[in-house]
Amino acid sequence: MKMVDAGIRRRRRRSNGAALPLMVALCAALLGTACATVKPAVASTELYAGGSPSLPAGPLDIVMLGAKGDGKTDSTQAIMKAWKNACGATGTHRITIPEGNFLTGALELQGPCTASIIIRLDGNLLGTGDLNAYKKNWIEIMRVDNVSINGHGTIDGQGPLVWGKNECNKNYNCKILPNSLVLDYVTNAQIRGITLKNSKFFHLNLFNCKNVLVEKVEITAPGDSPNTDGIHMGDSDNVTIKSTNIAVGDDCISIGPGTKHVKIHGCRCGPGHGISVGSLGRYKDEKDVEDIQVTNCTIKGATNGLRIKSYEDSKSELKASKFVYDEVVMDNVSYPIVIDQKYCPNNICSKTGTSKIAINDIVFKNIVGTSATPEAVTLNCVNNMPCQGVQLVNVNLKYIGTHHNKTMAVCHNAIGKSLNVVKELASCL
Ligand SMILES: *[C@@H]1O[C@H](CO)[C@@H](O)[C@H](O)[C@H]1NC(C)=O
Ligand SMILES: *[C@@H]1O[C@H](CO)[C@@H](O)[C@H](O)[C@H]1NC(C)=O
Ligand SMILES: *[C@@H]1O[C@H](CO)[C@@H](O)[C@H](O)[C@H]1NC(C)=O
Ligand SMILES: *[C@@H]1O[C@H](CO)[C@@H](O)[C@H](O)[C@H]1NC(C)=O
Ligand SMILES: *[C@@H]1O[C@H](CO)[C@@H](O)[C@H](O)[C@H]1NC(C)=O
Image (cartoon, rainbow, N blue to C red):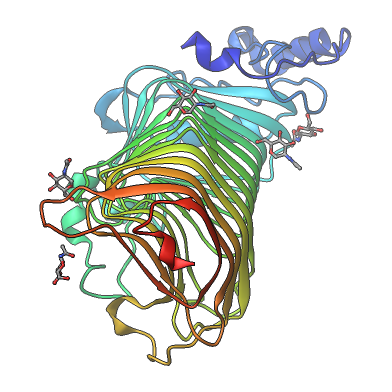
């Protein structure tokens, strides 16, 4: 789709008039005629103008490298080769995954690379159902600067083949099935236009990343599929998620400890478990979560809407602060607004009723729509460390269930103010 590329900021790369013909000549001398088909992979106006231009070490179209789009042949090695060819070059290079169904096992796309890399995904990648083909994750991009994945293709985890092997609902320390797309220690990344579908576990996981843009991405899995979170991030900085639709079996978006400066704008969520910060405090040495903005989103048919959760009797001491939720429409969401400082699934905490997680400056503004249970607002904070600076401004949520119950707010130890809030919820702050 042309449109996907059109939005990329164009930057003209310095032309390097002399070097390029020389390299082509050198290449031809060394490798013979095969070189004739190798051309600079990216137009000079395309994304990421890092470094001076160079040729990759070989082809970047996975079909030229032996991949078969028949849905059956294992194309892992062809994609790994394309990655190696691109990663070792300088300048900007584009790996092409054309239309077709390409079956693969684990793709460990490691850096550091000397090139900026674009993965043009127009076909479908299928993650094999053979769990022996993975160490941990499926597609894992590690320690790379300047990488973009775009196109109208699909990353299909083929989760239905293995969801039955997920025991996480019975065993809290269960074996984790492979996440579909994982970025670890990646900086300046863009994921645009593609679809992520039926992941075995999470669809997209960001760990220790910086400057990431996710735009116009579709993420889909059945509402009852286990642990199929849409986007999870932890220890990351400056993540923007725009115009993205997520319908999954767990959190649409979850923001873990150590994450700062997140903007979520124009997204749709549902079914799923909403847009969630947490769980915080499960492990030692977790870092603060700060500056999270969720604006212009719709949450539909989800179990939670906007949720912040931290473990009761948390293992680390940290702060969650400066969150703004503005212009969010709830459509039949079971628990639209939730702060839970006493989160404790499977009774793994000691029930001390205390917390070491400070929750401060949380603004819910212009939140309207419907709640599927009477409990439209839940602020369940602890006595030893009340939630501070909580604001409910222009909040109008109504219970639409069939019981004759009234919309209500359940609030403990939350300090702040409310302004222009429907009367059933106004007593909360
Ligand atoms: C990434 O892009 C920046 C800005 O264009 C550039 O300075 C840097 O060298 C690039 N990094 C790599 C590994 O190409
Ligand atoms: C945050 O990331 C965006 C790309 O999504 C980038 O344009 C912007 O410059 C980054 N901001 C900072 C402060 O690094
Ligand atoms: C809000 O999001 C919707 C998509 O859900 C989009 O159509 C609309 O343009 C967005 N509005 C603003 C002001 O960004
Ligand atoms: C709201 O969601 C519940 C399931 O959570 C469903 O049973 C009910 O039909 C939905 N109501 C409307 C009006 O969509
Ligand atoms: C409705 O209110 C009654 C009485 O307060 C309560 O027992 C019942 O659990 C409520 N129903 C729901 C769905 O919350």
